[in-house]
Amino acid sequence: MNLNQLDTEQSNPDSLHIDEMSTIDILTTINNEDQKVALAVKEVLSKISIAVDCIYYQMCKGGRLIHIGAGTSGRLGILDASECPPTYGVDPRLVQGLIAGGKEALTAAMEGAEDSQDLAVEDLKNIHLTDKDVVCGIASSGRTPYVIGGLEYARTLGCQTVSICCVHNGEISKYSHYPIEVITGPEVIAGSTRMKAGTAQKLVLNMISTSVMIKRGKVYKNLMVDLQPTNEKLKTRAINIVSQSLDCSEEESIKLLTKCHYNVKIAILSGLTGKDEKECEEALLKNKGSIPKTMR
Image (cartoon, rainbow, N blue to C red; front, side, top):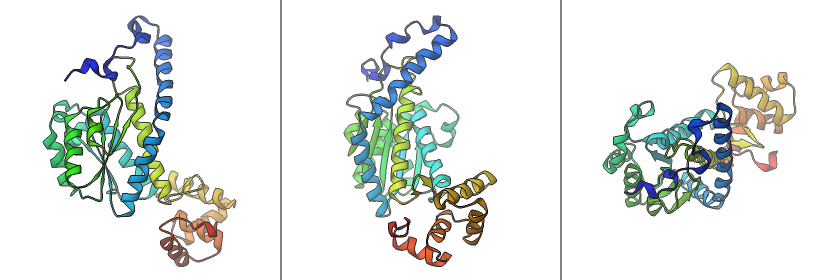
């Protein structure tokens, strides 16, 4: 292992004297580097697109998306997975995140755990991985043994595999059917991959999960119509979504939501068609959860 050869470990000439800068110059330097991240992601949109289509296809067959990573990468995977149920109303098991070292690693450094390939295999066995699932390995350095072990095991089961790293020719790319390499370059603080590399990983994960959910019919226009209104803020959002979708008053939205037991998508479909709750449910089932275009 030669860390000095990794893109993310290089010294950044633009921040070489950051320890001598004023506060505003430190912030400006960080901001200048951050602006490069979205452009780096833009370079790999075609790779991300292919991965999204694979994940969507596997989910249509009953598969799940499983993120695996260590440290910051693992935490980002868990964050992405945890946000899918409240945002899109999906089963928490549909998108899952695994981190080297388990739950303790979410708040405490468990760096040694990332060196074990066997731990990843054990973690994947514990969630009963099958060949319908897609395993997405996340490692900014592209060489984390925990991630490699997970991807390698997934492939032995016949799973499709995706990888996200921030270096050229990442080791994890060799174990991935759909490798995504976002080259973000040297960090402001050399090797601190929670910064640009972490931002790039978050952007890619956002793109993947959001695109898959759109394709699964979880979005109408650009509104999250399968959100779960479990608190007052989300109930207000649900009312606003129905109002925007139907161009109707708040009072009419509340009336529709109450009639449809606060199921946002069914309330919208009922408002569009005049059909009752049961008829709307049947229409959604026939159209695999999406609001039929003929009823819009």
